[in-house]
Length: 213
Length: 86
Image 1 (cartoon, each protein chain N blue to C red):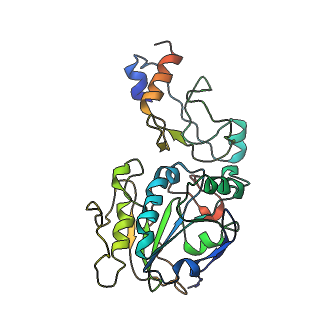
Image 2: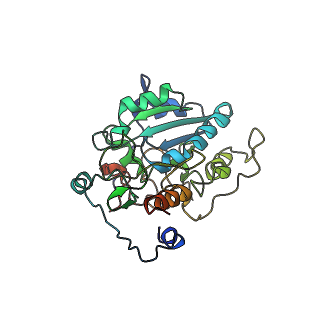
Image 3: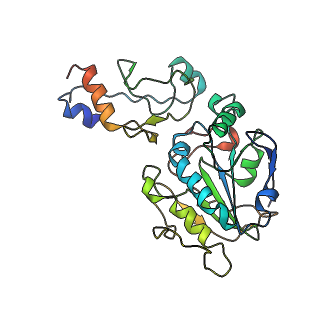
């Protein structure tokens, strides 16, 4: 079995480079979101994800978003376009450019948005969609929020949380997967259970974000 | 789309589904993303000037301005009715 490192250092829209180590440093949990500018599902879930980043920023959660798409094929996913969105205040975290798409391949990101939660040890606590319906803003990224609540060692979150944050389960349009069988470095991620249905053949690693085929 | 046509009394209007499977076809068909709806090869929902022809998903805005991978059903129905003079 081939083992890959999930670590990365990538250029950030707006300037500088950001590494996963920096995002994780001293954090109770870390959220890594593979997203982009042109995908309707990514756009539909975008504000919910930014709200999670804002809500958990002072609770020891690191948050970073990565665009792994090919700007030649998708001009709306260019670094310049990323920068314009960041400058417009559309992102509540660093927004990084995975130009080679190698990071997306290493993480086995399949769709946009594809959300990963790492606990403080670097184990993948959750991967999948933010919640079960891109079209229902009231779901409030509940799968992601539930995963974050599970990342505190004593099982008690440090602050009150919205009551609608329910345990993830199989959903009508998306699936999520909990699991601690993948460590940050040296173990491949689970191959099943990622958000799968909305754009189920979007292959980030082959520049076919929204293709079916 | 079938339901919209039926509701407009256009049950005899046929729907043709075209699969766009490569970038070359996307460019040739002036295809800005899936799904795209046309009547007599004219766009029912206007495209964005910034759109490029590519094998990709299409972004729509619903009536409440939310992003969506499919058009607002009411807008689609209205555009269809207008195209057929209903």
